[in-house]
Every structure is written in C-alpha cells, then in structure tokens.
Image 1 (cartoon, chains in turn brown, blue):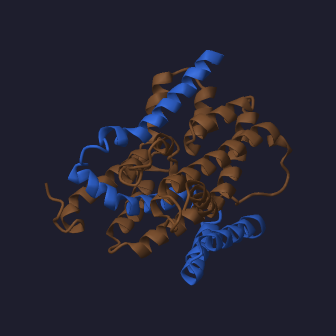
Image 2: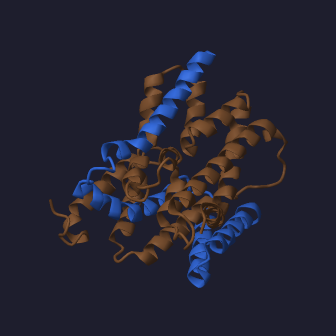
Length: 236
Length: 108
C-alpha cells in the first residue's frame, strides 16, 4: 500500500475512537470558554490556552490563578502537581511512541488523559500505521478542545439548549476503557488497586487533593507487589 | 495582574505541563534500555491508572447528599451492561450518556 492510503486508513481508523471525546471536549471546552468569558477574559485567552496548554482541568485552575495575585512560582509548582499523572502516562507510552519519528514530540505534547487512554488501548487495524493513528487521535482531540474552548469564549453567552449531563460521556468512556483493559489482562490486581486506592484517598484527602496521594499509593503498592505481578522475571 | 504578568503565568502553566509530559521520555532515552523497574511500572500501571481515572471522574459526586450519586451509578451500570452485551465502545458510551442526561434533567 502506498503512503497516502496508509495515512488515510489511519485517519479513518482513528476518527471513530475520538467521537466520545468530541462530545466531552466540546461540552467541557465550551463550558471553559464561557467561564473565561464571564470572568472577563477575551476569547483570545481560551483560544491560546487550549492550544498551548491542552490540559483541561489545569486550564480551569489557571483561570483562578489569572484572577488572583501574580505568583509565577506557585503557578509552576501547582501545574506540576496537578499534571503529575502525565508522568505515569509517559512511562506507559515509552515503548508505544518509539519509532514514530517526527510525530513523536507532538504525540508527547498532546498526551492528555483521553489521547493516552485511546492510544494505549486501541487495536490498530491492518493497513493503518501506528504512528499516524496515534497522531490523528492526538490531533483530533487537540482540535476538539481548541475549537470548543474558542467557540465558548466567542459565543458563550448565546447558548440555550439544555446540555446538562453531556460531560458524562467522558466518565462513560473511561468506564469502557477500564473494561477493555480488564478483559485483556491476565490478572486484575492492578485494576482493582487503581480503583480501591484512589477511592480510599478520595475519602481521606477530599476532592481537591487526593490525586497525588493516590498516585503515590498506587506506585508504592505496585512496587511492593513486583515479585508477584512480574513473576520474578524482572528482578534486578 | 498586568498583561505581562498574565502571559508569564500562562507560560508557567505551559512549561509545567510540557515538563510533566516530556520528562519520562527525556530521562529514559529510547536509545538506551529502559531500567527493569520502569519497564515493570510501564506494564502494570495503565490498569491502575484507568481505575484511577474512573474514580477521578466521579470525584465531585456526592453520595451522602443530593441525588446520592444515583444518576452516576445507574448510568455506569448501564454502560457496563451495554458493553458486556455488544462490546461496541460508542454504543455503550452513547447509551450511558443519554441515560445520565435524562436522569439529571428529568428525574433528579
């Protein structure tokens, strides 16, 4: 097959996977745009921030930072903490992103929760290229978030139909991805740890600060279980 | 905040985000073999992370007050059932989302 048809095939393989993200990102993006709009920012802010930061929850936090006192060091540290989960994604994608050439920096730059989840779990059909598939997943997601945020910033106040609950598409997507991973794996120890440890940390630390303790607990427990989970073949 | 201060703040957020995304790839260069520990984590982490993300999505759901998280629980149960039945990603997600929207707009 020639290069052009491989790229085309990769695009059409990637597109359906991104549809739930389209629903979720447009809803959240428009919400974010409206939020910035009503906080007194021009649409240029959500436009550039969605394009250059491309980390949904962080951008909502950034609005409150911009409304507060100027404190760049705190902004930097807070960003590192909120986005620390990306380190997990990076470690998981070290092999998958190998051999993707010039697309690799963009794949890493655009590695949001959703792009990571799709690129990690999706089965790439025969005839499509892994690198291009992951590139289009990332690009489409980036575009949905960018267009939603910008539209929200421009037309925010004019929206009338009742979209309440539409963002559940994201939750539903993560449930499905969790199930897909569940059906694939040999044992469910890690899946169950992820659910239970995060839930425990959410109960102890509250909705705003449970993610870091949860990640630490997950890492620590998985390292302790290394002998069992890797069946001893990975001892150093 | 002045415009310059706003731009610096946004630049800090961009820098922090980019750093968390690129760091593993910088530390574990693809030329050299990845340490066994990191390889192990890379293999077992995703399952836990997907579990973590499911809980993360529900972090603001209150099970004590309001609707007691019933719309969420019912819709997630539907997603699971639909997915076990057809195993069509979009179908399961669309079914769960429509169910949730109807529940929060009309019932609860």
